[in-house]
Image 1: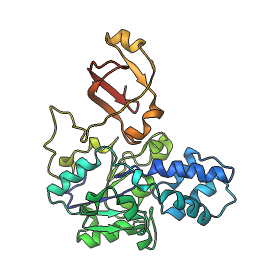
Image 2 (image 1 turned 135 degrees about the vertical axis):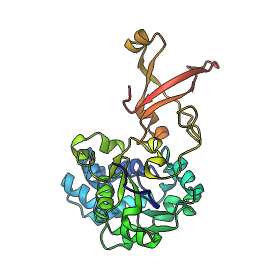
Image 3 (image 1 turned 45 degrees about the vertical axis):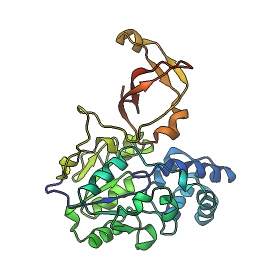
Length: 307
């Protein structure tokens, strides 16, 4: 469902939308939970997405029945994360879209559940983000966190636009609910942990005012009354900066090779998780070499179960 009138501003979420902090947080959460004899499940992780840190840990503790106060879990995780936030990478398509909107003069705000004191740590190696947004609203600066609409309403008011003219880009169900409650159109770009559960996401598909995309690489500005991209190459989207990935062939040269008449192979997805991020899905063209050979071949790669 597209908005009835062109968007006048864009309000971004941070974690899982712009930066791949969620896989880093999950890694640290597993370590903290293991200290207390538990194991992080997909359900517990999904329950925490989009929420302020203390509320996220409360949701995890409840889901796992951990006999540990959420505040203690938060303190343990923050001690580990404070040294690692710089590891978080931009998610695919985010920099391209941000740069395009900035060059078009589009007013933009950041509405995040991140605490104000933590925000500089997350943006330390992403200096361009510090100068992109006219407004930043953090989780500890509003009375209620997502899924309440407070942060989005504050951002819209600060930018000077009514909610109906605001376009929100979010990855979590809590964030989608918050933006919808604020009366804004939402582009929902769910992370893998959400996409894997049809039950958790069925309520977002087809809802009035919500557009669901597989990744930001699928974003088409003109659908929301924004100037179109000009960097497409014969219908394909450039990946900039280019990915350089390496993985072990774990299976291949089977049915696909026989039907297509060309060599096919599968790479170990777990070894590529850090290179590709969690929100990538699609068909990619590029070049590849095999083993120690210096010969380079044209290649096509399917990521995220596309084929």
